[in-house]
Length: 307
Image 1 (tube, helix red, strand yellow):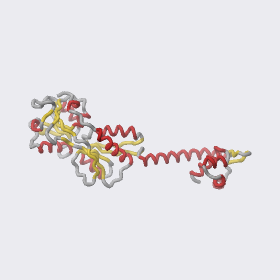
Image 2 (tube, one colour; image 1 turned 90 degrees about the vertical axis):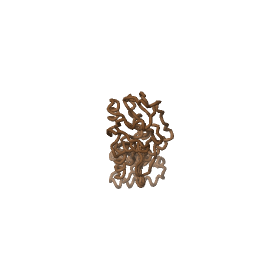
Image 3 (cartoon, helix red, strand yellow; image 1 turned 180 degrees about the vertical axis):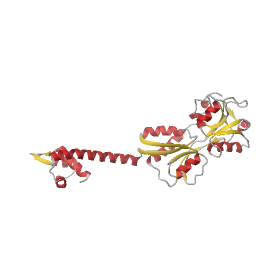
C-alpha cells in the first residue's frame, strides 16, 4: 500500500461515493473501484459498507481513516520541508567572520534573517588565515576575510575599501579638520588591532612601509572591544578601519581620518571554487551582491564623537 492509495481511500471516505470520489481525484471510476478492492484484499477487512447509494466506513475503516489522514499529513509536510531546503528557505548558513569584519555583513544578515526566517546560523569569528583554513577543511561555506589573502582556489566578492582612522583619548596637535598623515603618527605609541603576523596588524604596518614611515608599536590587541576601551582610558592610541568605529561608536574619542594616498583596507567574501554552496549560502552571496551598490561611505564627521 502506498501514499496514493491512502489518498484514494480518504476521498472515498469523505465523498461517500465512488463516483464523487473519482470526480474529486480527476480519474475514472473503474480504476478507483479496483484500487479500493486491492486495499481491502491487502488489509483483509472490509473498509466500507453500502447503505443505499452511499458508502459508510466500517469500524475498521474508521480506524484506518484516522491513520490515513495522519500519514498523508506527515508526508505532505515532509515534502514541503524538503522543498524548502531545495529552495533555500531552510537549512544552516555556516559563515566565518574576520575579527574585524566589514560592517556591511551585519546589515546583510539582518536582511537575510527577515527573508529566510527558517534558516539557522553558525557564525565563527577568527583571523583571516584561520578562516581560510576552515574553508579548506569544509568547516564553513563562506568567509569574510581581510584582503589580501591567496585567492587561487577561491571565488572572491570584494567589499568596499575602507579608510583608516587614528584614534586617541587626546587630540593631535598637528591634526587639522579631523585628518592626519601617517608621518605625523611616527612617534606616537600605538596599540594595533589583530596579532603580529596576521590580519589587520600587518595591513597597517604595510601602509606605514609604503609611506616609508617607521611607527612606534607598543603592542597588539586582538580583542577589538578591549582595544577600544584601552584607547578610551588613554592606555594607548591606535589605528583602525572605519568598520571598528561604526561597530563601537559608543566610545568618546578623538578621531582622525588618515588621508595618505592608498591608506585604505579592504575585505572580501570568499568561498571555495570547487565546492557546491548550499541554497542558503547562495542566497546570502546574492544578497551581499545586491546590497553592495547601496553602500555609501560615511563622512568622518558622522563617525567622530569628539575631534
